[in-house]
Length: 528
Ligand code: ATP
Ligand code: MG
Image (cartoon, rainbow, N blue to C red; front, side, top):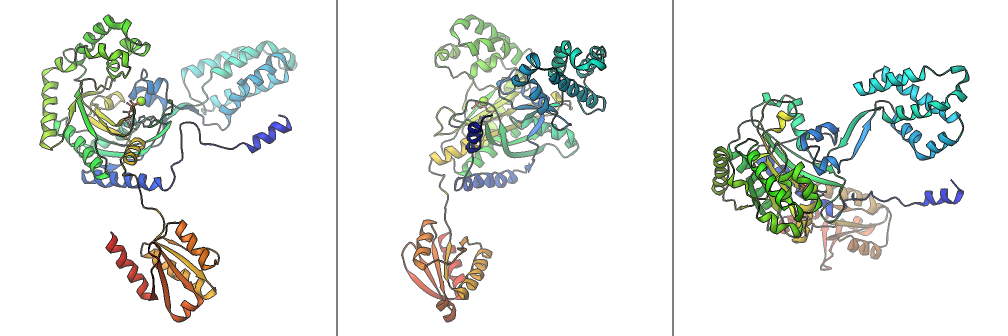
């Protein structure tokens, strides 16, 4: 690297990675309120919080979410999690184009490096520090067979023909377990349910979570690569329609408490995966889709085979007239699923919940069944879904557990916040209650005492660390949006009478020290 480039690198300004962002005050106060309300409301419905890791085996998501979904096939952040430090990084270096150039054109020493790296890898595999897969075993065996032909005495020269063997080995061997940043949390909750034997608890088990999810999507308003979800799952027990309705009731109660107005609840039933129900419908849908194939875009064309239900999800304008004419699942539900859906609607009505039916609301994955729902909110443009959910009675079994009922939802917290802000519910009170303007040594001791007492009583207090002229201090108090300035000079302290200035009105009052706290507490009560 030249000096100039090195300097430039050093001066480089770091920025948050594309699709991620910092949440800052005062907005974080709104995030806290939104999360606090979730803790409170969900607790009243008997849910307990689960905090699961943000990374899990890639396979968990591939299995649970489905490997032909966009989330798994395109959007996951994955890495090899190796037990051996630096192994993955070293491999990246050895396979980098810089290094490869050297290897193929340059000196044989590089090949010696590569051989010693490969030998380390083999050693690590033999010690059990690399995944003991049959693939790795075959690679190691093959490598050892080929390398045993090398004459160690003339190593450097003789090595040249082995470069390709070395490269292939280093490229193909699994140095660690495939691991992914979680793109959603339902899979993790089901994993935890099984791992901790929660089947033996009273059923159903009701859990909720709050935390970041990661998907490599094209960033835009309401769509980020690190985003936050607030979700809940009900696992085990029965699939009584009242459970579906209560989950939705909890959601709508939550949205109401948090101040989200204009949310619309859409519901649908996608039946279950049997011949006389969804499977029959999907066959019918496929054959109808085949007829209109030429009128569909490339994404939908592909989905005719891989995931035909997802075509119904399409937002592409030109496809809409064709999709509207496709057969509808409601006409194909089996009697049991029909009855379940009718009962869910009745249960929603019993709870006074308004809903709209949307036959195109699908979740396109095999294990989803029966109830699906989505909630949209105003002010979000085309990313207007703030919550998606549904019943997934097959999922726990898919992850190796016993047949288990399940239903849940995930709220997009970022979008919820955006919608609250757009609806004018985003403003959070800022500033300080009291700014302490002090001058003089005695005053400072009193100021420290006052700050401590006020903070203990729950007031937010700014105590400047160095002495300032009163004029400057009051200016500072204004800038911070303080309600009151407590003016403490050595005179005030000597007199035992402290001056409190209400910054909005400019009014000043004098109080003996003990009365001041009482006065402020009184004022707080009045204003709240
Ligand atoms: P969309 O159709 O908007 O991509 P989705 O079907 O991928 O949503 P789900 O997997 O059902 O979304 O996740 C539930 C909720 O999480 C969504 O309704 C949305 O509010 C939120 N969400 C999903 N992806 C993102 C993202 N990349 N950024 C912000 N919020 C998201
Ligand atoms: Mg998505």
